[in-house]
Image 1 (cartoon, rainbow, N blue to C red):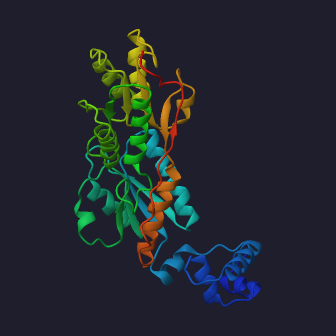
Image 2 (cartoon, rainbow, N blue to C red):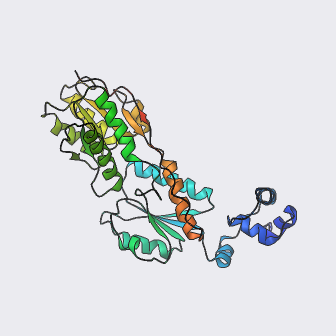
Image 3 (tube, one colour):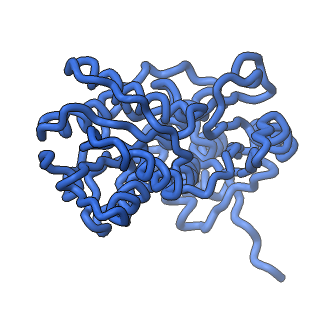
Length: 326
């Protein structure tokens, strides 16, 4: 005969609490003291207790599962964001169901697919500008990442402004920009930080170029900038585009950073090891994921919205790709 699965009543007996208290601890409900929560968790671990998800869903009306609509882009940033979301969900006792909006960007179909799986809430990854699901009541809470202090932990305007001031402080007269797709909020926030920093310094604001986050698009932008003799510094909205841009200039016989200073964003693992090592803005993917999951779980569990947090300003990591102009 197979070993019998330990029951919640046995955890309650060993911890010296009621079965209801065990249920509240397992479901992550508030108003349980730290001492009681610790006793219950220790007893559960000692007995090898695992709550029955189906039974818990019947009792609470929740499956403790969050749906994530992913853009489907094979990029470092979104991939790291998904990993961070999974860690954040697991830490809160939730699991993740993932679906891709696909090339057509059919967010409604993706959300309906998740709702059919019984998710308690949905996070929509970028790009979503304005969608009916965000403006009208849905069967479950729906949030979109990448925009607003409720779900975005980074102050990109301040961070990019610091990068632009770094380049101006080295003696560059202005800074060109290779941005991401215009339908991404984070892309627009980074462009705004670049533009406002130049205007605040009284410098010319060049016409920005638009990439698609890939190194290939950065390479194409670099080729276009080669013909402009006034270009001495560029801020790229992510590291992949920055690496592609550097490749275009090096292939043309130009030197980085002597002829061109370049700043990226994300601080991907390769940024430190390319030649020259890339100056970049370091992004904390877990910070944004924790904030987004906390906000969504608060709505799922009916808690009042917490005070809006102070957004973190990502740090500038100065390496060998920036220098005074020749």
